[in-house]
Image (cartoon, rainbow, N blue to C red; front, side):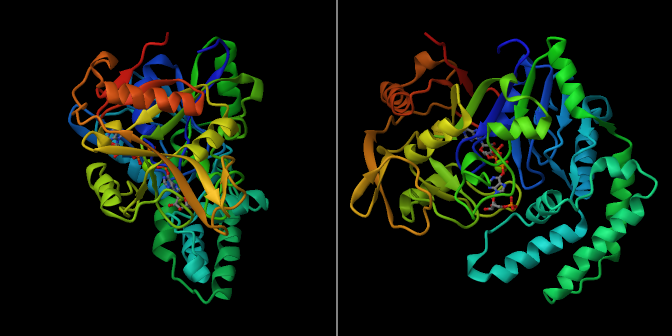
Length: 427
Ligand code: GDP
Ligand code: IMO
Ligand code: MG
């Protein structure tokens, strides 16, 4: 953790790598944890002391020892879902008003953004993205087209009029798509939730973070989604609408690029994806079902089945390059504990040629994964306390991945609980 730098933790695959769990584990090392993009499309799961929590907009540092948690300007916030999440946390004894701060510049998700998300998906038919339906795309669209409403606007006297103008614009658009919803109830709940939000500490987060850095405090930036869902570098158009990569931490929090310290890249020992879009190593057979069952691969937000497949090193190398990953964290290794063989995709075969650079498009060409097969370890690792206890085949698997990815794996997760985390010693 270099001085006056922020560390960034983000997903290297299609999301749900286990970011929430690891942010919670790493939080004691930091003074501030800050979310920099995405919104309630995220579902970050944490487990400790026999309890399970799912966070959507609130950073995963909330359960540790009173660190400051910040929702940054790059995040899009749904007041109604935020209120549900915050009230549940308050009921479990967390004094949120003390530890949570929210950027004035975070954009607001309106009820009509969610309706537009659904209408856009319907209009796309079979080509739909399979979004989480949380209004993410339409909210970021309004932000970029300079029509958005920000949380800071909720503090202005003319907020209601500005809200009404945005709502009317959305309703017109919906009408042009054949949708004429009655939003009276949704709107009332949303306005009540805005009142609730106003009672939080609404801040200029870029100053708070940079001042904290100048005072020698440490900051962990928490990513949502994953690199392959990044709007620029992911499997476009089957992506989310924000920059999920390290650069997103700069724009989503107001930290300069030369302030980036360590970048923790998280990946599962296999690969999953929810929603539509290409997935070269997807398994449609018994092995895929087995991974889904053992790994409980169902979405934390939508409950949808996650598509499962083998680890994809072509995509991982690309994600490591784009993010400048300095340390890798491997999650859910325990899910493969009982497998005879583990496969890893080391290249793609496209038009009879082997390719190791992640291609421009994955859905317009026929991509055949080229696999290396490694022996399984047939050992229950879930109760292990140190890397010395790892079976040899698993140690070999780690070594193989480190060589292929040219980056050290410094943490291995062997179960969903906070305690099931092995920090490896670095030689
Ligand atoms: P996130 O969105 O990246 O925070 O990940 P999710 O919470 O959506 O999905 C990860 C799921 O895997 C959650 O249900 C976690 O409780 C669970 N999990 C995290 N790490 C491990 C692990 O090492 N082993 C197992 N078996 N489950 C894990
Ligand atoms: P966390 O932070 C997995 C996927 C959706 C869809 C695409 C676009 O928990 O890893 P959106 O609602 O963002 O417009 O949907 O992105 N998606 C995720 N998949 N984990 C997530 O978040 C995701 N957030 C969005 O399934 O394919
Ligand atoms: Mg998730």
